[in-house]
Length: 136
Image (cartoon, rainbow, N blue to C red; front, top):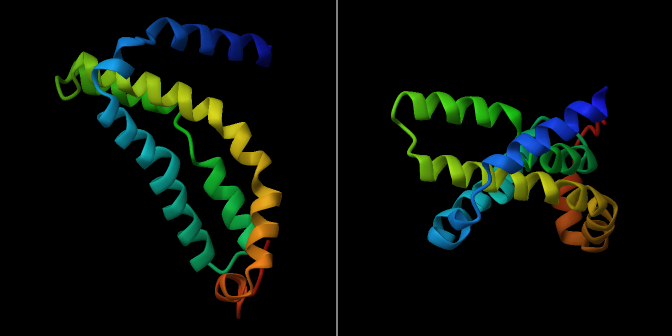
């Protein structure tokens, strides 16, 4: 049943996808993707790190939040209904969702290599893990 709903979700989103949105607004699309894939995970990482969880936990949470999903479509539809979001914005939202959802598994595969790389950089690793209580 879960697979059926996943297929239904992606088919529905695929029907909303407008490839012209990528061509019409590449800078806006890049900015939105930067917020979703870079800024949002960085903020999540810093929050989890500040709460004194392990670097690995902070990376995992950050990568888990580096996408947008179903709720963004609900908010987008409501914003369109209220006249806050134009149709072009909805197209960019769908495009960002598809790209960020597709990139998420790739990001998860980089958790171990990223942690190993950070461990190999003594100064960075000391700053990130020094004096932490390592909860998770």
